[in-house]
Amino acid sequence: MDALDLARWQFGVTTVYHFLFVPLTIGLGVFVAGLQTAWHRTGKEHYLRLTKFFGKLFLINFAMGVVTGIVQEFQFGMNWSEYSTFVGDVFGAPLAMEALLAFFMESTFLGLWIFGWDRLPKRVHLACIWAAAIGSNLSAYFILAANAWMKHPVGYEVVDGRARMTDLWAVLTNSTALAQVPHVIGAAFIVAGGFVLAVSCWWLLRTRDGMWRGAARAALVMTAVAGLVVAGSGDLSGKLAYEQQPMKLASAEGLERDTAGAGFTLVPGIEIPKVLSFLSTGDLDATVQGTEDIQRRLEERFGPGDYRPDQSVVFWSYRVMLAFGLSTVGLSVLGLWLTRRRRPMPRLLARLFVLALPLPLLAVIAGWLLSEVGRQPWTVAGELLTAASVSPGVSLTEVALSLTLFTLLYGGLAVAEAVLLVRHVRKGPEEPAPAEVPAERLEPSLMY
Image (cartoon, rainbow, N blue to C red; front, side, top):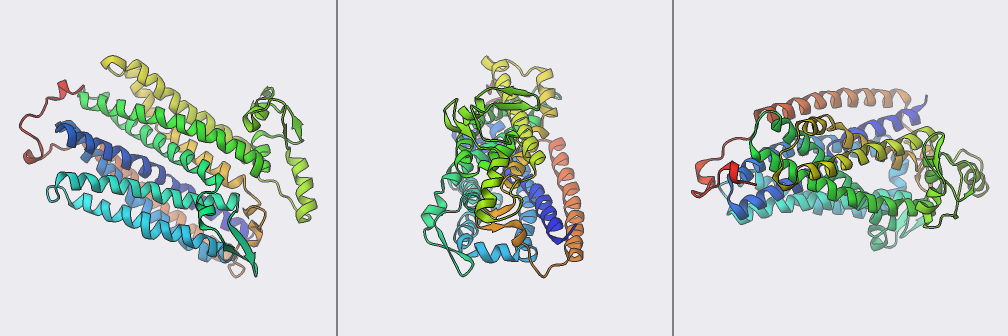
């Protein structure tokens, strides 16, 4: 094992850990904003209680996401200086927009929302949480646009060994980004929906308060709608991968040779004929490239080397993403059907939603592995190999030390996050102050 291997492990571990918080922050912020909007429009007490309850969970998660995200920036300078040098002129604009526009907007208005209860006019206070939620989604857009450029670089030229941006609009409207952004943000709403469902159903199993049924129903709707967005954008991403990342597509299917009418492999040994060709192009008989034939063509173009990603990781991460993501959305659709017309949540289904809490998180992690490992051995497709991206002056010992420190730090943060979330969930919503509840408030039994 050399410094490159450890640097890749370090970036993978820290990014997966950071990505546990990002999707929950994106989806939960919008959910909290929706709850506060409902309270603002109806004046019903239960909406206020839910807003503050899930708002605190959102803030705990947001704080952890910020702390773990800072480490990502350190790694670019420590372990990936050659990569930073190559992409810096391109990434400078979208990452500056993310920091100065999106994150500044998100953090500023979130601070106003935290300290603005009973101090700001209700409409202004409501606008603050919506601005914070919009800021988090804008932040995701700019980061995903930069990430999409690594898979499909556009709007640039290489000068003196460095990529120079020639068209910012082309970078921000990269076809890969336009497919990836709704896919990732939709997945974030599924994660947030699964989290709200688990918490709401945990309380439904302990109380008959109709407030929790309402929260669960709202989360079911959000998860089901987000599932449609993920499915549609995923289909578009697959078609783009056929054109732009054929090696990743072939690795995800375990397809070794160029094949006309290629089948879709559910698991090794079980294949649905011609489905892969149809999903990739809309043509049942289209030819899909295979890993070995692509490898030969890439060697002819770029010279000797192994241009195949880790086949097993790409193949199985794709199936884990599909299985766990579809399971979460399927349970949500089932829940909507079984709770229609004010029917109570079945206790068995409530238990399933609590147990299913890890599924959407595992699905998004698997999706990240598919996306990033599938691009290997390139950090920037066709331009910069991962082996040429690592910092030349960093030793194996130095990377091992930083990896150990980050692992210990993240382990401690994981314990702190779990303790804070569990403690707050078990405590439940607080009763609102008398001034926050209108005299004509409705009783919880009349809410739905």
